[in-house]
Amino acid sequence: MEKGDYSSEVDKHDSLVVRVLFLGLGTVLLLIGIATVLLPVLPTMPILLAAAACYARASVRFYNWLLNHRYFGPAILEWREHRSIPFRLKCGSIALMALTLGITVVFFVPERELKVALVALGAVFGIALYRIPSRDRPHQ
Picture 1 (cartoon, rainbow, N blue to C red):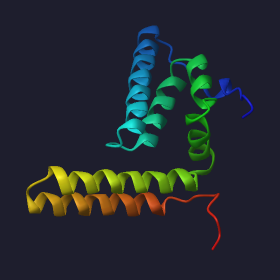
Picture 2 (picture 1 turned 30 degrees about the vertical axis):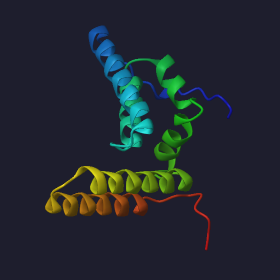
Picture 3 (picture 1 turned 60 degrees about the vertical axis):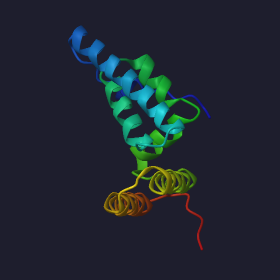
């Protein structure tokens, strides 16, 4: 992947204190985003998009680093430029969410009503994620 310079998109806040707060919040969000890759409890992309937004108000260096990151950068750029999610990422997310919810419902949730609620919530999130466009979706 060719390194891009996204400096022109950064609009640093005037206050040093606010920039430091944005930088700290962006870093916390990035760490949470990394954790959600390993422990799929929350969706990763919205958290990484929020981290990018914080970095865009705090630091050219960190913003460029995140958008040029080997794993996170392409998905962030795809969303920012086309409001779409790569098809492979979307399918992987849906499968991992289904697997995690399935294990949770089968092994860890004893109440029937809560099981039904979790399955319904998972179905809603899965359908919502599936409906987000993918420019690289294979044609059938």
